[in-house]
Length: 197
Image 1 (cartoon, one colour):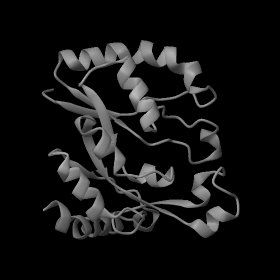
Image 2 (cartoon, rainbow, N blue to C red):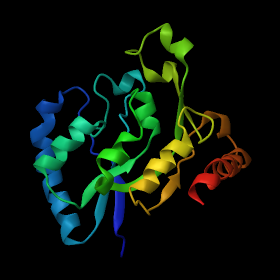
Image 3 (cartoon, helix red, strand yellow):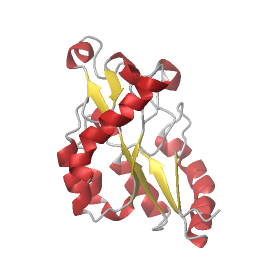
Image 4 (spheres, rainbow, N blue to C red):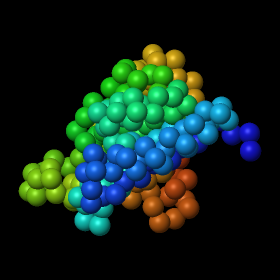
């Protein structure tokens, strides 16, 4: 198909520990990464925890959620053919510095999402951070959440990344009609244009 980049998730058995499913992860992903490398295709793994509601607990349905896990994955399956489909909103959810992946793993940036998130601290303070995130976390379009997009794009540009920064329309305010989804794209363009050019 003459495609040189694909994005996906690792997957995860949400009822098992990371160590408990690591052998299956290796058995599944070693041949996939080897095939991608042979075809000169890069795989970007999204960093979404997929752990928002009670049906995704306790572990979530994606393994590749943090630098500790990424480093282990890349050490056990060493190949430059795979890295991240990076979405900063998922680090907002995890209360992590969303610029660290650019600074620490610039060569692993395969694909980037332009999506934001907002943490409602007042709502979180009642059930606590270990409750289901959908009680206090809301996906937003850029400019309406907690990501500082100038800061984000500044670090991204410093890495030399010249790939796509793709719009992911996931904001309940802009769902429901085609006109609202179009308005979301206009809002994103307005927010990101001064930084991306």
